[in-house]
Length: 134
Image 1 (spheres, rainbow, N blue to C red):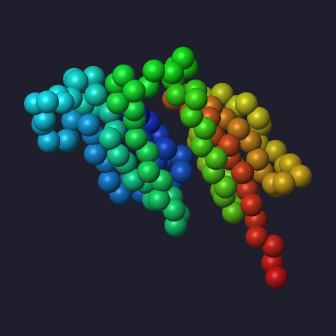
Image 2 (image 1 turned 90 degrees about the vertical axis):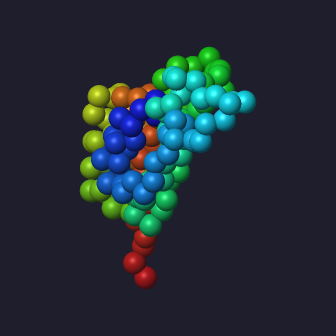
């Protein structure tokens, strides 16, 4: 997250409720393992309530994110929604300031599926799965 901006973006896009947020800087001080200044505003643990599901997210600790990619382009989140209109709403929120990689469209497995990389570099696969009436 690097700050709470991405957390607030996810909250808005997913119509989530933020249940809890702890930053690395909130941890009790340990003189043997001091928290670097650049880590104090990073999210240690955040719980978002999305419908009946809890999503837990966190930033990496400085030095532990030594991947060749930048901007979290190595992160992908798939979300399945049970209403095509809600899928469209979530997709439109996620694409604000981002890049659509697969436009929201009907596929053989979903009435509404698309992919978008949000403005923070996270790739989202947004899909719809509607239960058949019995």
